[in-house]
Length: 410
Image 1 (cartoon, one colour):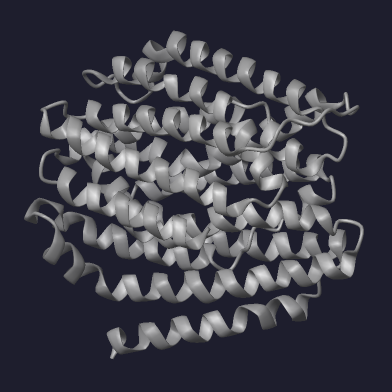
Image 2 (cartoon, rainbow, N blue to C red):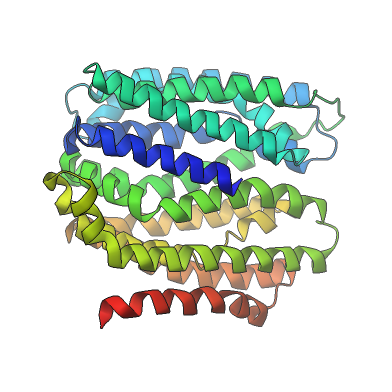
């Protein structure tokens, strides 16, 4: 899975190196606005069936897949209908409404492909899942570049995503195991809990980009998105791999709290060892990397990129204890946590925008540190994970990150 994510990252940045020469920051900003809307709406595109297919023992795969199809179709229609209103939230820049309406196709395609991916995860067929992820990444790269070379502008980014989600979904269905029958009928209520959780999570995750786009407009969002994509590349990709693998494994040992705690601390150790040093190294190298790889216009992204590296390092201290809560069936707790995060992040980001995109990044870092402490206290009470064990798991990554930062400070 890490190799597949590495391939995806390489494809993503290969595309970015080309696209940065054909598109300006405002065009990238429009694409980020579409991504914010689709990212929030996408949490309902499968009605939470990807989690339930993995976690529930007696789920009926066919019923879960049908619910996912209907949810994907419904969210596509909803975003298409609301596109004029959603565009106005961002100041109604030219072309955004049409881009959102077209981009909503991703939601329908996601509702089709996600149940097959979930069955691959449940069976721990990570090799096949990796193949699906690589196919998606290569399709995004190839399609986006091809459209950009033919003068499609911002549309090249939206159309590239549509092509990639469609091809990845079809491949997942070809590689997935056969559906199995089940007797669990209580999936809609649980799915609503998961959608509520994800809706709050997605709004929380997209809040910085929404307020940068709506308060500072598309040019600032283009620079912020460019900086975010670089600074957060390790934390987002490693976290995605961890989520794909950890939930099915945690679910298999949900009855044994000792094994569950050991697995969680092992995950914490690995994530911190990877994310914190990588963020520290990128913080020091950002000025040289941007100057070397990109046209001069993108030099304004260096300072926000360094500020976002601080936020990435803070996020690396928190190995998503919500996965443990979900494995234990505590969906209501996970929903409550997500709603609390959302309530907190809105004023934090709004205050940060008064200092520009660098202020937003530093506000995210401060919130991450506080949230990590609170989340670990909850996990100790719910799953019995030792506070001392958690700190020991963080120590190697924190020391290595400090060693990487020190040469740039001297």
